[in-house]
Length: 236
Ligand code: IPE
Ligand code: IPE
Ligand code: MG
Image (cartoon, rainbow, N blue to C red):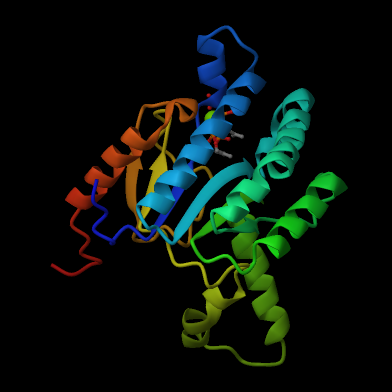
């Protein structure tokens, strides 16, 4: 499969782990565990297809509303993946970035430590920027950018033009280009508080496949679909 190079940044809402597990009479947590393989297949696929950015939604600011058992598992699981696999991804040239509010006291200290360490260990890697949206919510991200902008320019009489030119600079990773495409798995057709600002001109692709069943062939089809889209950005 040829990536025409126009797909530089793919963002993914990895959805359907719970349904995958329930379909097989397994606990929901088994679906999250199975999703690890799809994540590593997606990273390999992104590297093969020369994407520069892959952003994955791992835990939303709303996911704290799940059962204590599931939240505890997801915190454990996110630590465990980093402990077991970060060296392998590091060898592949993956640069990790954790997008989201890591100051939240609900996140176990051990998770925070591992995420900060992983960013540091992989910071010079060049093959793929892997953005892990963890405790991420787009509203939270936008509100924080507004507050930071306000604090920095507190005594100035800002004009709309100043905001238009500088606003994205107040986001956590303002070097992150806007996604070319957003993929959501598992049939839901909504954004669920993901990258609301950055998705302004992304191609939206929804597939029914549950996240644990995603593999390179399915991502090839997503790329084919993306390549059929005519991106006009308001022009004719
Ligand atoms: C996505 O799968 C993973 C996370 C939100 C962490 P879900 O757990 O939302 O799976 P479904 O949507 O219930 O099937
Ligand atoms: C979005 O999926 C969050 C992640 C994939 C981490 P959800 O399953 O939590 O979203 P809703 O509840 O279907 O909107
Ligand atoms: Mg879901």
